[in-house]
Image 1 (cartoon, rainbow, N blue to C red):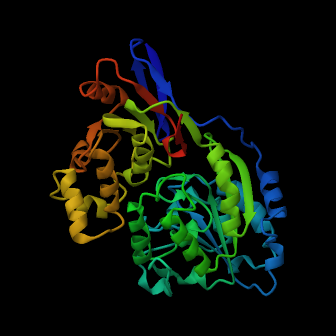
Image 2 (spheres, one colour; image 1 turned 45 degrees about the vertical axis):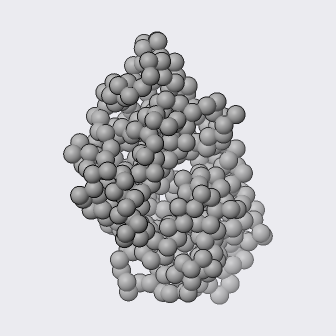
Image 3 (tube, rainbow, N blue to C red; image 1 turned 30 degrees about the vertical axis):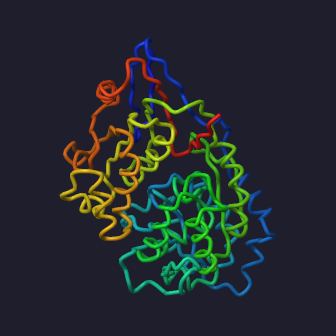
Length: 418
């Protein structure tokens, strides 16, 4: 027996694979991170891209708004923010607002703020969570060239200096995360996100694509219209350690970060497999199915037609979207998913059903999670409580000597076929 282990929430899932089965372990190259990243952040702030020095932007500034990611993103704010805030010390702390950019996710409660911010920051600065359903806190900025109506968080937009914090990594339909996206999606309205995300149906809205990606280019325009002034972004390795950091204008930061992200994410793949066993990489990327679905997109790229994906995702917060669950009421086939979408139009939340259906029409999907089996079945997936039982289930659909691949960090892996 060979024992494999993959991250599952804050623990591990194990699989004992008989010696008769051969498997490939597909993982991005190992990259060293910084145990003490503060000097790295300081260097990034000292050498901003486009000569966009933060200190030079403070003349006449009375209010600052800083957009940060919510609990579903593994951004190490405890390392990133102190050097940044030190350079804003001329601004009264009461005039520096933190906005947790939740997008269509549920707003975070004050009790949850310690999940994303160190206690001393929560105690010193005003912290707010974006609420996409708070219609009183939006301002309209017109439409993008692609027709997306721009509704943005009013308090963030009205700040004299607007800063975005985030990480740059592969994104399953935006190409890459980072740059303007934290504010352009995380702090905008439902109509904005619905119209933008509807572009994921375009073939170029895919992982690793930036220049030809209409959805990502729309995000760039939204961010420019919001007039985000400054970005501080990092890149992380598999241990969630900071590898690189960039500061400057959001567009320049993303352009500098994309080649680095690609170099630490692209992984050679020889062929497509009968069975792909994929982990999101653990918490928080598998906090719910809404997030974990991203790993499924990457895993399906490696899976042959009629193959099987075992998705390992703890999902302690369930599906992560009541709109997704409600959409699936009375749905008994993936064909019905496509039909319902055609009838009602594109909506964020239910779009997870569409993304899963696109993969499920050609592969079988087994979900190892903490979610109730009846809910998993309602979402038209096959439930399993452990990786071992999931593998045993998969064997009934596989050839006698299947080709098998393990994808331990699926969302951080861009497959490159040799």
